[in-house]
Length: 141
Image (tube, rainbow, N blue to C red; front, side):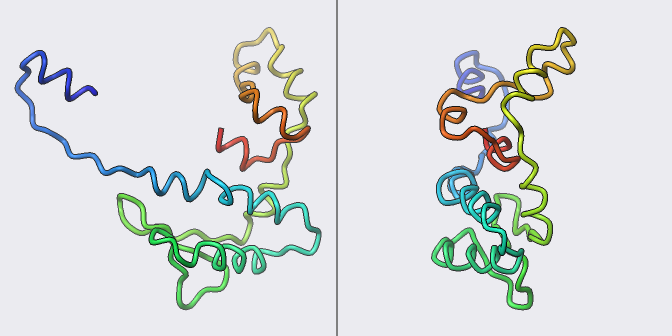
């Protein structure tokens, strides 16, 4: 949109071609994406290996998702900047940190703007779906 504005105002500039990264965002954000991580966190016997296997099975046909040949606990996503490999070793542990709704309400109501801004309110549809919000779900919103 900014480049269109430059054209209207006849500003001398060079056009920049932006790569559409929507399919990568959809891979991560849309179901099953983050939902797979939340699901794995609900099962006590889930491990980073079982989570990795679930990712491999789910995204086997996705052109942006790559299963490394030598690792059983990592995956690669082909972003607009190139291939980025992620290690899933601590994904489950980190995502198990839940944000309790009552705690969030308390922080949001703080008179200190810094504290109030730490956890902005979730969109309505997300707050209705679950009493607790995982870190992965929070990051998505």
